[in-house]
Length: 292
Image (cartoon, rainbow, N blue to C red; front, top):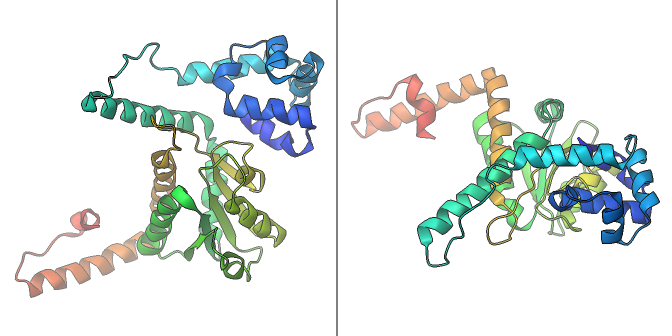
């Protein structure tokens, strides 16, 4: 896909070509209606720069790149017209917000490649230690992800608050056997990206959950999952990041059958002991995960 091709070449692009790359990854819905000349006028660059940019990515020219952008937009479009919602219509606003999150999720399903998921899951399962770095709004989804990996699967996962001075200390023992995952909702510079850069310098495998292919977090990650999406208020979507992380946990859980078996057996024994102490009915193994 064009976003991944842009990400692969981004570091080697010139200033004007990076301007084109940023626009196409962050505002591709608008770019889908622009030919090379219109795009050059919009960004204040030479039309020839647009052509060379497309060729740098491996396309014959900009029209071929534009067709791929338009195909992506067509996949995302589900509703041609949405009824305006009055600010006092709470039910309408609620449904509109849910529809926006649905669109965010569909976009992620379109943009995240299967081979990337395979590589991410393999890295997470093989990690000697997993450090999940996040800050701001991204910290709560990251915390839940770490809790599920440690609590459900007993994996060596640890949350690292990127904005704290202690973050470099927590990453001081990194080796090539460790994995550092950065979870970021920002398309701008943030401390999460710096911690990923530090991890790469130390030789650790890095994974980025980023708002765009060209965000600093994505640029510092070996593997990138793009979780772009806004809410009806214009804030970044926490729901899409939570959904992607939850899906990763479920994939790992389905493959880590021995870990899940140990969890179920231990949890069943503990819960039934507690229920017997209360004089209540024991539960069966099939019902155990519903107690979580």
